[in-house]
Amino acid sequence: MNYNQLSIDQAPSISAPFIFFLSAPLFAIAAALILIFNGPEIFQDRWLAQNLAITHLVTLGFITMVMIGAIFQLLPVLAGAPIPRPELSSRVIYGFYASGVICLATGFNTSHQWLIKIALFLLAIAFLVLLILVSIALFKSDVSGGSAKGMRYSITGLWIAVILGLTLAAGHAWDSIPLLRHITGLHIAWAGIGWISMMIISIAYQVIPMFQITANYPKIIDKHLSTGVFLILLIWSLSYYAGTTEGFSLQWLKTLTALTLSLLLIAFASMTIRMQIQRKKRMADATLYFWLTGLINLIIALLLYCFASLLNLDLDFLIGIVFFIGFAISIINGMLYKIVPFLVWLHLHRKLAFKAGSRSTIPTMNDVISSRKSLLQLYLHTLALLLTIAAVFMPERFTYLAAITWLINWSLLSLHLIQSILLYRSCLTSK
Image 1 (cartoon, one colour):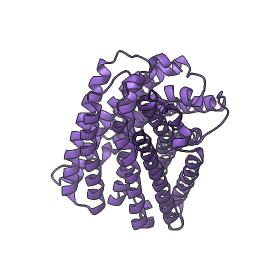
Image 2 (cartoon, rainbow, N blue to C red):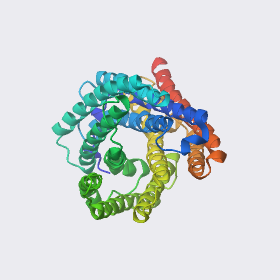
Image 3 (cartoon, helix red, strand yellow):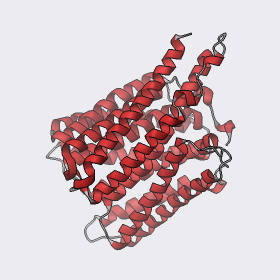
Image 4 (cartoon, rainbow, N blue to C red):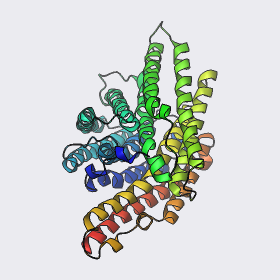
């Protein structure tokens, strides 16, 4: 772990990331409620309007909501690229973004096009402001480590995913605009690999050695993995799009690049698992198990994708669940249990450490969210994931069990995060 690359003194106030962290589970709760109200039919057709609502509540409302909050905190720390006026910027972005996600999900769920139109306007502003600020900050940064490089690629991936997503949403909002469903695969790939996976990889370079006391990633991984993934994803996208053009196909190139991309990500996941198994800190915590769960599911999702591609099978629903819920949400959920207590401790230490008699009253990270609480939520998360996978094959039997378990799971996570900020405020006001 190279602490010289960290710039903790540039971190913004705790309110910048926390406004996103605290809201994220609420959108996931809404997704669980839609699943409860619609029942097994959700698993019958991936293009159901309610399915689109659930998908975007999970991907935009939870995954990206948390990741935007993390960007405000980690960009200055890992990439030396502070966002200008982070408190104001975070509130402006949050206001447009949260409102946009609510309108989008409600519009899909109720089939009201006017709500989708409003959502497009709000989300376009939120993403435009976010991406411009972040892109400028990263461009100005002179940090060149693996984390900073990966973040630059990840933000580029988000630019592409947003443009494709807005194009697709416009087809739902206006009858005069064609619904280009053939670019859905591109949108999912750039959101899942170009944005989410690249950001997780970038963060892993620092947080895995720091929090789990492992060896550093090999230099070849740190220096070249993100570049390789990004370039191959670009080539895959060109071959994918060419495959949708009548009379023109590059199926062999699409298959080759998909397999290569999968092998690179499997290599990263396997390397990380090996590092975690060989960690110097032998005591395990919930965050470690969340990471292991996520990485194993990443490998499974990629193997399923390769299997489906080679045999021309339709496993998109199952792959999407294993990738976005099993991989992305598992790791993001686990990181919340490490980042949130760390931020509470860090900011209390900054404010109280030099006040007489205050240092001894600053809570430890375990005091903020105990291991018992995080492990309980890990068990619920794992159970809900397994029930959801079972519901793909037997929806009548497992859909409601999965939905209720997710509802309890997200509610528990929300409670833990709220308790954290209440503890933070209590420590401040007591001095």
